[in-house]
Length: 288
Image 1 (cartoon, rainbow, N blue to C red):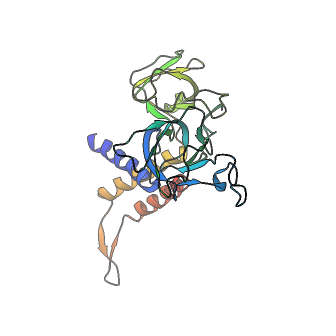
Image 2 (image 1 turned 90 degrees about the vertical axis):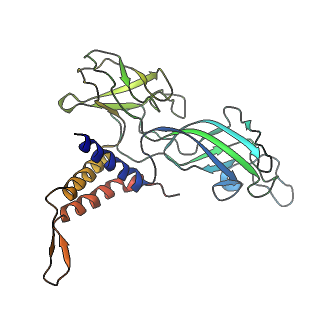
Image 3 (image 1 turned 120 degrees about the vertical axis):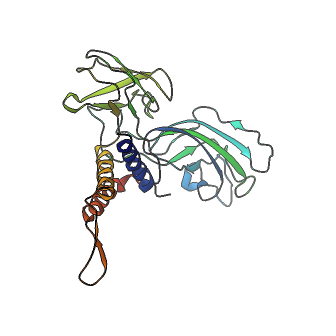
């Protein structure tokens, strides 16, 4: 049983490796420097275009390309002149930063969608990042929540409950960008007792805690049951990768000589499963 869990863990790691990011929701603090390639300031980021005759009469936005997506929420941005050591960070006021392309598929739906929507960049307004110190003149710290909320039950629950004890509350209770809807819509994956639910609050921002539901559950669920918004295609890719590993490590994989003297293997099915899994994950790859 322990090795089965190890194989499942390796299959999950293979998905993260192929997509070049962790897909489950995480809280991250990322350090960037700019203006430069990943941090642009100017007309392409919005704001007023500085004309050659009159100059800029309004501060320009900054556009920051982060390492992971989809960006669900930006919780804080801090800046410091890049030539200032030790660092003395200045926190930007709330309301001066936002996701450039907010995710919409995890909110206000009957069941979570399977589309790979959402963006990788954020906008920072008000001229807090500019060209006054030249290229890479600013160090910028961004704290944000990204990915798809994903957890499992830490204890069994009965039918008719309005709260779920889970091992990770990250991303479940955030507001959508327009502040019109709070909480993610997920599903409890429990075989014939699968059901969708909507989370309205969580006891903690991240880590183990309790999710508050908008309606009571219809079925009882055992400890360890998955509670997730991850697209079904990503989960199917994990199944393919785990199956491919089982075929490769098991007695079904043998090496024989082909007619031409080269070696061939009977684990061709494993290669096909890996290819299918990578196709399913392709839409979720990080490209920058």
